[in-house]
Image (cartoon, rainbow, N blue to C red; front, side, top):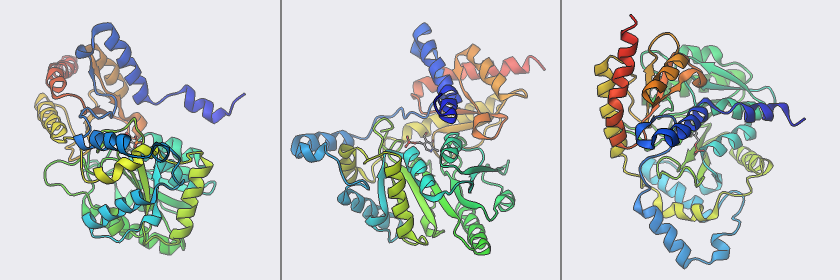
Length: 397
Ligand code: PLP
């Protein structure tokens, strides 16, 4: 018999993947234009031109044994230096390359960081609603997941509940802003308050409580919204970054971990990060995509498409009578479920070829998530289906 836990993860794929697979099947049956697939956060906007230009020139001009060879386990030094130079310039910080560790995206950044920090039975706080894989990552690192409720008006964390959940076994808190699944961006005030709470509790329990900032959506914000850069507010921060969404490269697997230069015992933490990467068998992040990074820092895919999609969907769904959380970032809308059961709504939406995800797996039932990283044409075409779906419920009243 294989490992029971791994067998369970493999045999019960995430709800998001389940609906995505259903969508693939349905598209074969009735054609892809007829299915409104809002299941997955797969960027719909191509990478900026500089990505392909850089890759082509690397392929044409670099020594292939280096380009396709192993890099050091922590990543190429020049690449890591370019990352801290970029961040320091942008955020007026003093990060150093020796605390950057190149990874295969945010998921790996998170699993490595959790394995680096956790001893068996230590607790990790996540803020509901949260990315469902956090549960798997924390369990795999032998940690215990604790869930903090949101403030239901803002969908920022309920800070009293955060205080209630902290105890001497708390090792880390994961934050994710801009947020999947709500699209909410935590305000500077909220980040400051979280920092204050964690500082006070670290003192009380006489050990650092780490803040793991999961940031695949850092650049995906609309209007003049600013995403506070967490290391400026809290010293014991570990940033888990990914280029999957900002550069539309989720299949290429590239990102990094940054241990703040102000983190307590930063050398030990960084060595534990390296050790966890080694123990998990990552070897090194893909060399070609590491070497792409320096030229592409500061660029993003055309985010105006996501803004247009958000504006159309948010305005129209509100007009039809849906209760929608106003999102300032990422590419998700969080909508209160029609009826009493989000899973039933997801099933009923299939009648109109709308593929939605129930919020149950995000640790906060009663809502559905719409991933609006699809074409604007598809957004417009889906509106009638959303209208019919809510009418379907209204007719029952
Ligand atoms: N964290 C959050 C909040 C996400 O939404 C995702 C992917 O959708 C990830 C992590 C994983 O990202 P990556 O593709 O960089 O591993």
